Length: 199
Image 1 (cartoon, rainbow, N blue to C red):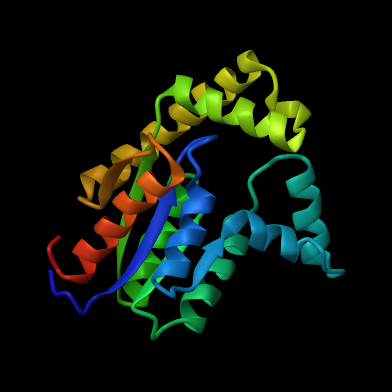
Image 2 (image 1 turned 30 degrees about the vertical axis):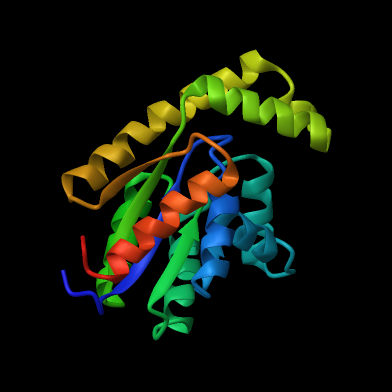
């Protein structure tokens, strides 16, 4: 693969994987534009249009936002940063229809998509979430049984996405074990390999 191909790195992981933190750190290191879909939707929901009111209601109910809305957010992001050699996204895609849209946008904007799965054992994820809950006072994250169920649901949903991207040769598994710096080091090395055309 040519090294001058523009890249779209998608960070994907379950609760406690640290995907959003790692996406922010990667973007800072490589001076790359980044998009956090959750943050983008929350920002959109603050407006006063009919669409923003609809999005706010959907987010409050914990449901998935319509495909057209997330597509427009990602396309706008890709369009604004067409010349950037690297883009970083986390929190999207979350299902197969979104994954197909992401592939279409990557093709449209001539980017190579790399779907990075931050792989983390359930026990490690629960320990991280409990620690974070104690520090940040998150009541919803303090019950290990509830956390385990959240992670089980994620793993069930993740199987389809991982299978989809693996079949296309776009899936890269990265261990989420270790400290924040250790995980970041793995991700930085991976980005550099792609930039150098090793993959």
